[in-house]
Image: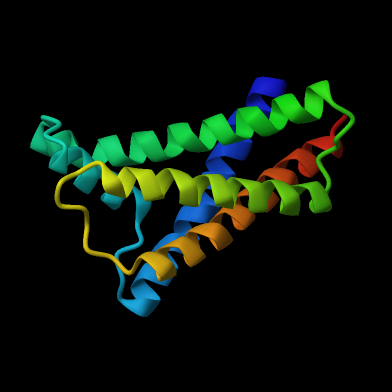
Length: 148
């Protein structure tokens, strides 16, 4: 049951975060879409991708990172006295947002010609998106509590 909870939390949280990012991108006419940015960075670094599967790489990496975050949350909840509450979800979201900003800051430094985006706006929406991500994980975990 734990694997199902982790997988479902990953799908729901990553989809929620992504929907928010795509909404903000469209609303403000900015490129904030993480899967697209990952593909741009991979291409700029010379990664050879089959054109038909190019978009799949960004999405796969995006969901794999979501899975890593959910597994990290799960391990913390399992091996500590910290419980999956709305408050810890907020705290995890803030921490995850800072990790995300830090990671993207260095990702943007890798290619010789990084994507042309508005970095302050990108990092702000990324921070909010990570809070939505972690709160979505909490929602799934609390849903599972109803069936225990």
